[in-house]
Image (cartoon, rainbow, N blue to C red; front, side, top):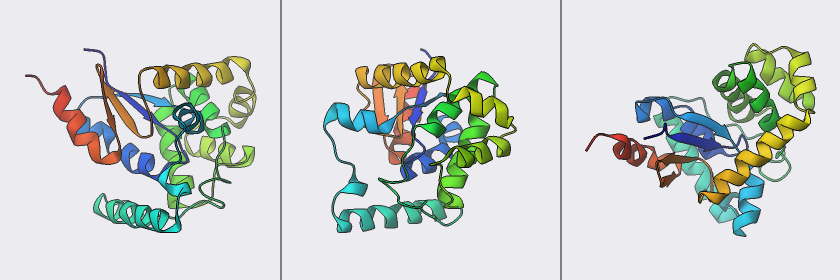
Length: 196
């Protein structure tokens, strides 16, 4: 069986929760795959819980805060304008630049921390460069990389491939042909990886 795939976007607080524990819960190193959640939503004509009613949003945030405490993460701090105005493709492109430098997990951890632990956001190039510095990446590498056509095309291709295999939301772990959507399904993904 191929390695499991962990699909995520930096604007999802549930993906932030999952990223903090996915490697440990699965017990094997998944392939981390940043994808453009906005395009996943569009492909499936979905509206996320965070953009529905105030009640839905409040309930979701309470659950995230509860889980963050249980996982030993800092208190949740939302970035300015979350969820709609905080969204950007820049950090996703920067993640693929980081992958070229062998720093994808480090960049992802720094980006999630900046977005949901510090609440500083990832909307601007300066925000993304700050996350890159925290991950040990050179500013020039990130600045040039996020504008490179090949990086933009990679993000598009990986997102389209995720949609084609049935990903409808983030975080999702793919194990073989099975999809496990949500931070609360990491344990089920781990069980699917266990030998029969």
